[in-house]
Image (cartoon, rainbow, N blue to C red; front, top):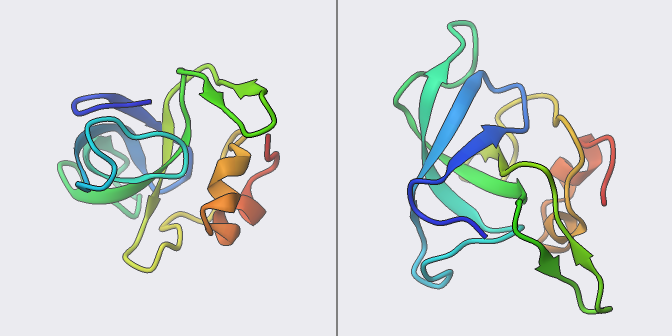
Length: 121
């Protein structure tokens, strides 16, 4: 689970160095989890990247430090909080997805991001 002002690592090659969560939809509430789309601001960006510094972007959360319970009773957690920068259609703005992503992302309907990832946990 992540909340407002949480710093996320970018899990793609869009050019962002850090992402700060600044908002989420009202149906999510105050805490977002795996597979949720949130609004972030880019903190530091590569000059040759797709995104620019201080740009507001939509981000799909693919990894969280806080464990998430699955329907079969198991839990999944990761070493960092990470997200993938997406456009309005839900497609990634970068061309690669780095690191493992959670199965909840694919179940949320983001098959393109799941297919770009090396490992779906």
